[in-house]
Length: 315
Image 1 (cartoon, rainbow, N blue to C red):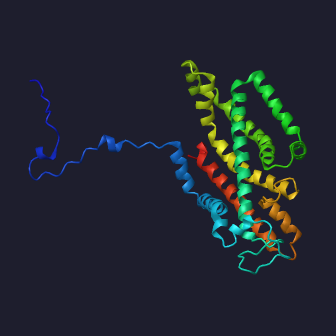
Image 2 (cartoon, rainbow, N blue to C red):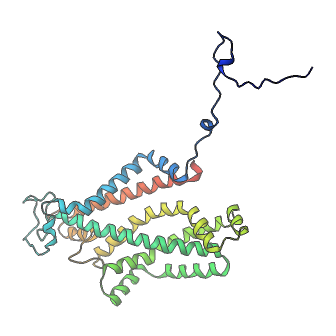
């Protein structure tokens, strides 16, 4: 006798009265795990790092204070007039953190200096990022003689003393803040190029690159759409380490008198002025030094957090 199969849908209504409730069928759409992009996963891991998140928010506060802070201070707008001179620095007269040797409010002057220091750091880092990433990706992907020739040029640039390059630019083109961008950016992209080249050498033999070759994708598209995005993790980490390095370089140049000059100022200039008045007016040294130290610490902690969040080996 042939067997028949009951095709009646399975539901609780088909059971006799008094039968226990059947287990509910799992919903296939609910059982499917929702995928998460690498960016969201990195952001979730970064938020778990309390030191990195605190550093990120403190950096935002410092940047906003330097941007709009001078206009909120009672002496901030007067800072535009650089010709108000007094005989000595003082902590009186309503100045929150005292004045400098010319009677100018030190807090407003420090915030103005933060604009220059942060702008130099961001612009020089952006220059090194663009040049270094493209240069290193092209050298690593091309390989052979092209790679050797390009990296020998990097070695030649490494052999040039940084101070000699800066002094040469100052003598030829004069003292200008844009020369600081050019001088620092012309040196910092070398490390970025080597990092990206090393990443590219490891990526160009991967399966997705071979598949792109087989599909007829151009070399330019492979570099811009495959190589650089897959090497962006170490690049972002190195950027967070480059920004404090550039700030220190600018402060060092300004401390030696080769950086920004009046009426502009920077944290390096203020620290240089504070060392001359360290005994009689220690606040002139402490205020810009504290701002500089906090910024550098925050950038280093943020770099460590990004390194942990973007490291594929710890996922």
